Image 1 (cartoon, rainbow, N blue to C red):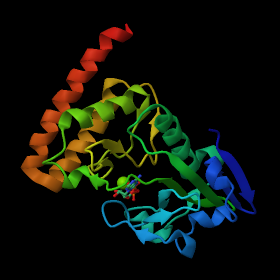
Image 2 (cartoon, protein in one colour):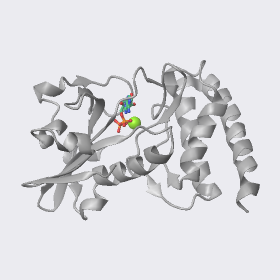
Image 3 (cartoon, rainbow, N blue to C red):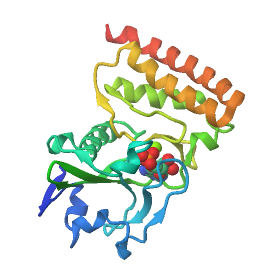
Image 4 (spheres, rainbow, N blue to C red):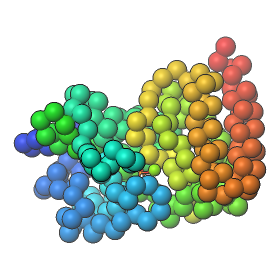
Length: 238
Ligand SMILES: Nc1ncnc2c1ncn2[C@@H]1O[C@H](COP(=O)(O)OP(=O)(O)O)[C@@H](O)[C@H]1O
Ligand SMILES: [Mg+2]
């Protein structure tokens, strides 16, 4: 279904149709809004994410965009304005919508907000919550590298480069189904081997950091599985 655009003063939102009907749609992006019953997400991420109850009955994850690293102290959550579609939130929403519509490994985006402050803006995103999801970082013993490889390959075949494919941005649900999240700064591009490898190596670095030798061993099987699955689909596209 088509997303709805809502404008209110300096705030501009893209919303899933069921949320556009809410009484105060911009307040869906405020963790302090009591009707959301926001609970901070404790695992992974930059401590600016909350599990929320949405007025349409859905469970969501609300995230406000924050900078990491040294820049964070100076300009904590402001970004340079370069047009609506270039905002972090709207761009991430568009990519997640495209992927979630055709793949079963990406949660659906439900809302994207930006608020202009002259030359800068701040932003927030709401996505469908995956129930009982656990990051790959904490589930290595149970995660099937073949299944994770298939999920990453699907994203790549859809023409999307993930900007931060770490072990907290791959989730497993209770049925061991794999979900890829956090498409902040992701790009649509023709996915040459170099782009794919960048994503795979990012995951390697992350797994080694959180799980050491075990992480490396798991990644090596994962990497082989990815290359094999990719090789299997290549001839069909010639
Ligand atoms: N759709 C989702 N379902 C369940 N948990 C999620 C979902 N999206 C994010 N999370 C949880 O929130 C954390 C932070 O979200 P993420 O999108 O990775 O933002 P960031 O890493 O920029 O803080 C994730 O590591 C994960 O634990
Ligand atoms: Mg993340």
